[in-house]
Image 1: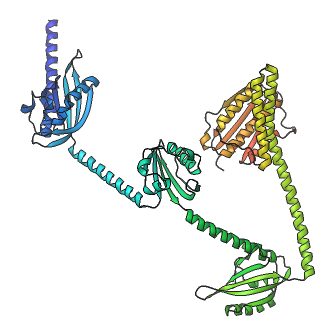
Image 2: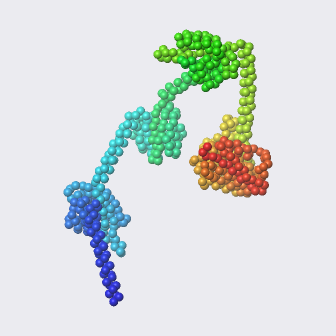
Image 3: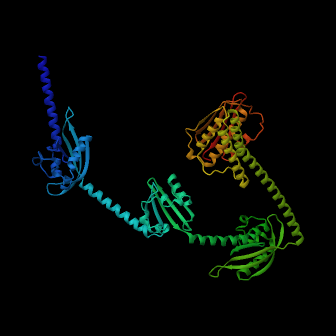
Length: 607
């Protein structure tokens, strides 16, 4: 009885599965948007739904039993395209293809075809499921878009050929992808020969040119760069604009030699005029038609003890007493009538001192002959003795000011020299000494002597640079703060029996100012020197910490520490404090005898 029940359940499941398959087949047959075709393992059509009939124009009775290649183009059949597609589906499990196919009415349609290999439970190929979609309308739109893009591209190329600027484009491997006629003329090479050529291979001697360095910078930083520079190969001045992308670089070059010459001549003329006016031994005073000051030169300002800004806009009678003003109104009226006069006037300086001046006054007119104001050449003619005394006093004051300024400048220079000697040369010599000491202790003379010589050579270079211009440490190229500190840690760790930990995981070097990075490096260098000389520590930790809008530098050691309340000799910590001030930072020191030392330097990144 149990066996009968089991047989009945099995029969029910088969009937249910058959019903499900029948329902699925019915749904597939009703789909009209897609051709859904089943073939056997050789590609012979087994099923042909309404969608297949709609797309190909062929009915099921025509296609069932036919090979699926019946609606392929003859040229595709010659290339065995159907066989290749089925083979790829069998190998990969599925395969997609696009191309023109034949409609029953003799027309063609663009089809997207998806082949899926079908296997039985024993993994034997039983056939293929083929889904076809008519993409003719999409293909037409796509072709039209490509045509329009090609047309616009050609129009742009023609426009670039017509402009007078040189236009070039490179891919991200620095191969020429476009050169207009003007660019070809500037290089002296036909554009057909440049396309596909590598810039650095074609012009190997020009890699050090400013313009080509900026090409690389624009690509590295992915930002537009504009510059004006001299181009030695052609002996011309150019204005260059570089537009980078991840795919390459577009460059626009304009010959500005003629404009530069004009601007240079104009600037030279203006500079000569300015020098003449500023160095004139007479005061130059210009007023407008309302008798208000519009220009005074330096001599005039000195004469009346006012700054140029203070005199601007003030009427000329402001510097006179009541009686002198009345006379001036009459002379100003004569100026408007075109009268040129030599006058003597009593003026009051800012301090209330009276001076007598000689004025040579001339009216000024615009291009239409309308009165615009007057120009006066002014000389101070106060009594000679008084003038000499005043000049003597002024000279004496000036000499004192110059002496003070010279003393201050000397003190600043001495301080700067001291800082440079301590921060740079002293550090190099100390390092050299450590290398030599290490050589004596370990017997490793060659390696340590070579390193010591390198440090001494660098110290010599630092002294040369210092004596030349006192401009601080000069570096041909920067390898980055993290790399520099890492090198420093490796070098110093090998010289002292001390462990140095460097934590920089969250340091954003690319967003840190170059000047600030140099300050941080010098502080680390300074503090490590202090630790080696005084701390007697076995372990040091250097750490960068980003906290809110601040960058914190921590340098900690486990040495003997010191009392922070006592005044210490030496300039090491003073130098650190001085460097920090330049970047609006602050220094905190945490230490006590026997407890080691922690130096914290905090820089605000958004001040």
